Length: 256
Image 1 (cartoon, one colour):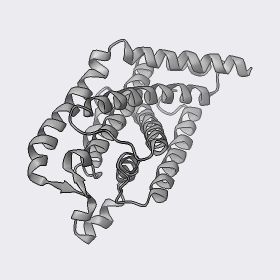
Image 2 (cartoon, helix red, strand yellow; image 1 turned 60 degrees about the horizontal axis):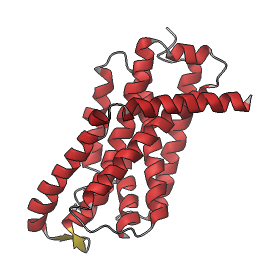
Image 3 (cartoon, one colour; image 1 turned 180 degrees about the vertical axis):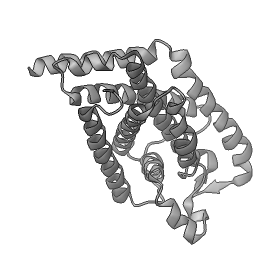
């Protein structure tokens, strides 16, 4: 029985990975170009006028945040589009009537999202070598935060796809929720620059914890206590995992 589940998991995972690698010109290349433009405009041109931030050059400061932004958006995009496509073509129903637990289905889609997020993050990191000096303060923290964040937003994408009723619905959350939270998550600035009240408001943004813990892994500096940041990320992962599995078990948005 376990071997059967393992084969099902590998099949879903392979399908998800082949889905985005087959069209890498649309899934991997555009985010790399976009981040390269961020480095050129914000890092080289504007960064020279800003000077240092948190004791490092501005381009060094924003590098971890840009990598994290790529991981977040691509992990989310991969699962929300793939799962909704499975709903639209109705082959998700075939998965659910097969002798395969919903846990295996969930893990398969999430692993595909993590694979795309990490792939794009790695590609963006390679591009950053052309603009900034590469250094890693703690490689374990970098890897851990990248995996936890990509899995978190893969599950968030799956939840969005479950409730979506049209292709337009899968773009609402990224446009009006994910993008603002990402840009206000400390990628381009330290929250220490904000007035005290806005620093406290910023602490309600979960992406702030991911960006800062990721920056700690690369640069050894963070506006947020590392232990607190990791607990927040783990907590969100646990909540979204439970919600995702519950929705799959109930057949929400699938069984009409």
